[in-house]
Length: 444
Figure 1: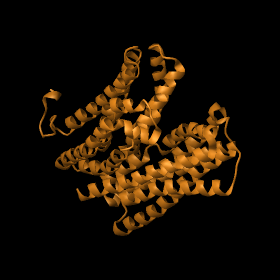
Figure 2: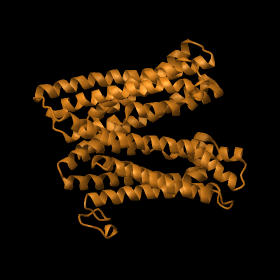
Figure 3: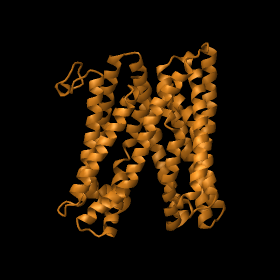
Figure 4: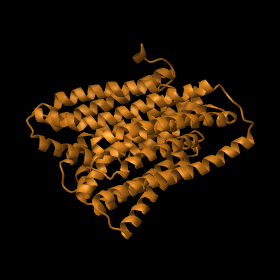
């Protein structure tokens, strides 16, 4: 339990500082690039995020799960196969990028070097994913926290140096801003490789190297990586579709499309920014829980699994309940302090179930990954998103509801997703609805 709390606290503190650094980075970019160039910079980030998802193929999750399940004598063999898989994936993604990028109209507005930078980002992300996964599996949370802080701090330092010493035209300035982001990833890779090599040397000195079936290692890595990558791609696609779906529903309710887009901007740019800020604690829980749950489930220690399930949900209640109460009672002053007077204060209040259940669903997703139910997590997201989108269209198209209908649909999707996660975990671990051992009436 000490390891659990120490890991959550270290990662949460690092994530909080990282969020503050991210805010400072956006302030510097907005000031130095100007409105139009900053808009172009933000517009390229979803493409970069998609490349990162493909390049990593969620190796941090799959490698950490397998390392946690295996004894240290097998770690070197597992990592060797993970590195081979990473090389193949990096090569395939780079070839695909070289073929696709020249035909992407979204890149035509940028400096030609941006395409090459995105291609060269692939191997950096892929191989750092293996090192990060090993450290997660070995529960080296302090080193992961350092890597997260190193990324933001080097990016901020690079931006300050470049824009302080030089003056660029807008397209060159965007390229330099993206280059600072890439170099921060490179610094993280160098740090992770140094730590990675040190840990591996310790493992090889302490234990005789053993090998396992090569096919089994590949299969176990891909059993987690492929569905989890599919889940990330699905989430990226739904986020891309959501603005068009919302504006269409509001247009059906009689709202002018330009006004509907403004309301969506208030929803995503202000309410979401505030509501998801505390989610760094949920992410810390996810990182810490995956190796703990994987190890306990591999050894069939169900009492440990039951304990950490209760503990993770208790931690979520302890920080989540005060946060959403603050959102409800102080929505107006919170939004005004950071963004000025805005209707987003009302959105923030109505979105409270959406945020609270999101805080719960993240550690529950870690449990699903740890006990080998990644496909279930993907299917739950598919079901919840389908229901949410249908309700958003139906309720948002009502002239009497409009944005309230959109938010109600989102709330229902979050509640359904968390409920599906919880019921599936309880069934798998033979817990009833109150998390006590024994079959519950809900499963009969």
